[in-house]
Amino acid sequence: MATDKKFAVAGASTFGGDTKIRFANDMMRTKILQKNGHTDIDLVDLPKEMTKAEIVQHLKSIKFGQGNAAIEAAIAYAEKKNPSSTKTVKAKTAKVTAPATSASEDAPF
Image 1 (cartoon, rainbow, N blue to C red):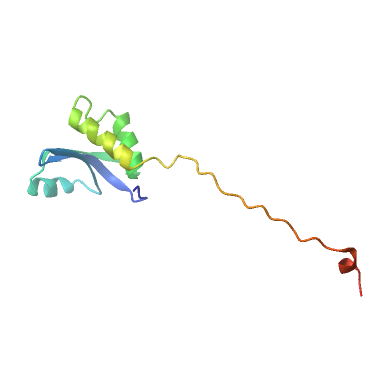
Image 2 (image 1 turned 120 degrees about the horizontal axis):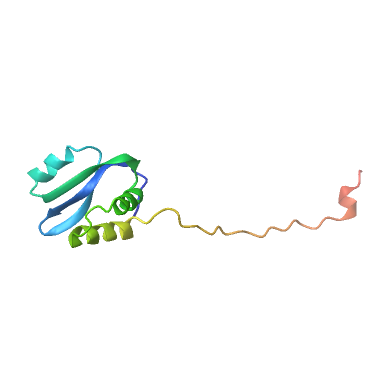
């Protein structure tokens, strides 16, 4: 499920043979990933803080990981899991009718 949390750094890393898109708030995340055994770590600073959906679009626009099938698949998976909020939502409308009034109700007493 997509959230509204924003990140300043994003990229990809491989752990246990699985390549995933990583979201972080600073480049110190690289040290933590290395310490935990991740390989092929490639994080980039983003031009501004972004949501996950925005990051996926940005990574695609800068052709991040182009030619690397694992990274391209990870971006496609992240896009599926974090859809853009540009979808329109149709609001339900309720029909309201006013009760009928008689002429004697409006007359002064």
